[in-house]
Length: 498
Image (cartoon, rainbow, N blue to C red):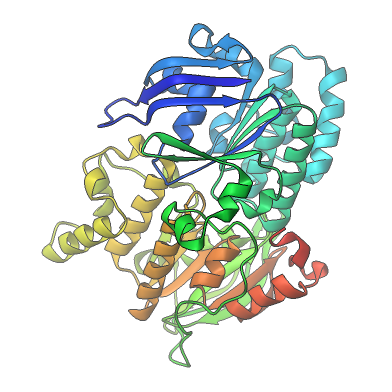
């Protein structure tokens, strides 16, 4: 179904090839999972197969790439799209319609498919993914996880022979990952060839036929059995995440005992278009804590973070820092926010400018900049335009900018989405250091591997309400063992890791 023969790919202005003499054959109906470090060539591999690398990104592609016997180089992009559907890492980039129901049938109607074919598929796929309640919603009102499920559904409704999914689980809650796995199994059973680019492997279960590790443009192919036979050190050297459920473990640093309250939210409410997004949220947090803010897609996590950082104002309630009631400007000056979508937060012409934006060029800022760049592997990218970076590199740029800003409170929204195991563990160490320096760190995340490694406390939101506040290790242990109440909006244990 997919054939690559001697394929190399060099992106514009890149110092080296993103893919180097790649040979690969993927059989019809095969599920191929692509892993590897950020910037290693995973997304480029997908871009070669769907034609985007050469036709939209102006990459120089040599060798032969064929899908179902058709040479990609000889087809216009719209013709490739009939056979190859892609769920991009930034799913906003592929939305054409303003409402969910229209978006789900856009591709199938655009290719002239009759509704008698696409509408039954739409009904079944929305049921598999649990998004029927979103059909009447605007795409602009969706959470990032809901947008991701809609993008996946739209490609599946179209029904191409090959589906490429770039980090499809990155913004999904645990039930969403399980629904995604069900859809992928159904597509496989329909004969669809799947190319899944993802760092998180545990939710895929027995789906993968082969795993391809891409690093520095070169491919190494494993069977699932061969990957599982690798010892922990070998998997760590490859930068892999865990392959199965980890045993609960204490975080890498102990939570603080007592101390003054750094942040207090008191009965915070927020509404959007008459719907309560947050409903009476109250909690306190102290310097040195690393708090995981968890909950299902659409629970209100990002809205809570935006209020905390001064990007939104509650309709009712109070936010205090060090005991003082604060307005938006004060919170903006004292909090650093790493957004889930890097493109919303990159403004300048180089990474270096991005790291010092609004901070001047004093020696202290310069020293923090060099330290943060080295820590997050950005030193060689400082003169690059942020728009030319991979998604993972953009993400690390924003984390580095938060370090250079040196604020009292650091909030990160899904910072490990798209991160390989090596960088996830490095981020956990970095977060621990920030906490040790007296910073308060709040991390919005569905990544239970990161929670068990880095966080001291877990706040669980459900439908805008805070339904659980407990030590992170205790929460992970509960979720792995018995599970919390579905009525509280938590996750039952059978959807955490299986």
